[in-house]
Amino acid sequence: MQPQLQHLDPFNVAGLTARTTNRDESDPEAARIGTLWDRFFGERVYETTPHRIDDMRLYGVYSAYETDAHGAFDITTGVAVADGPATVRIEGGDYLVFTGQGEMPQMVLAVWQAIWHYFDAHPEIRRRYQSDFEAYSGPDQVAIHIGVLTD
Figure (cartoon, rainbow, N blue to C red):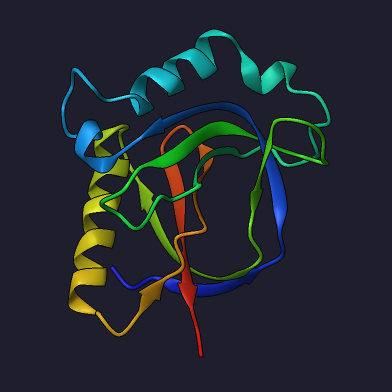
């Protein structure tokens, strides 16, 4: 899978947030991301979030990184908003975009595996660890944006 480099302007997402680690996510008893998405859909957060803009995608945002892929981070399930309280900011800058299509959640997990392999194979490409995000344009389509440093 060859990612595409995109430069993005900053924007805001609002929704539900939890703190987790990749280690916790590999343990079904400690994992929080699936439960957060269940709450997001169960409580219909996508319908009730104030200041929503004309962007119908759903977002999974990774932010507030403690260190890198091994430290704690925030995960926010949400929608794009104009502004307001309880928002997480997607930093502007360069992103490598990895796409996938297929049955959830296996497809998104496979895309993340491809991302880990890509960065293992390309140590010269450095992640920013400020904001990364999944953008879902349909029930079986995702574009995962990983912030990178470009010199």
